[in-house]
Length: 99
Image (cartoon, rainbow, N blue to C red; front, side, top):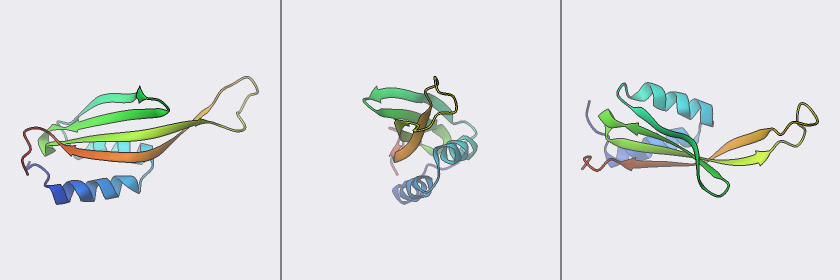
């Protein structure tokens, strides 16, 4: 399979920004048969959770950035429930992708 060009990466970014996190996660899982999940909800920034997919056959790295907030009314009174919202999508080429 050919590597994604810059225009194709921009189109992929625009498409993923319209989806929820779960939909974007599923879309990336099905895009590349040889792709791998580098990390899932890794807290590398304060208040931001990062999930990174490396799509090796497409020569692309996709990072989904989520923000977290506590749910106003949890199901049970002593339970803390989080709400993650997708705030940013970063699509970058791999070092060997020169397109």
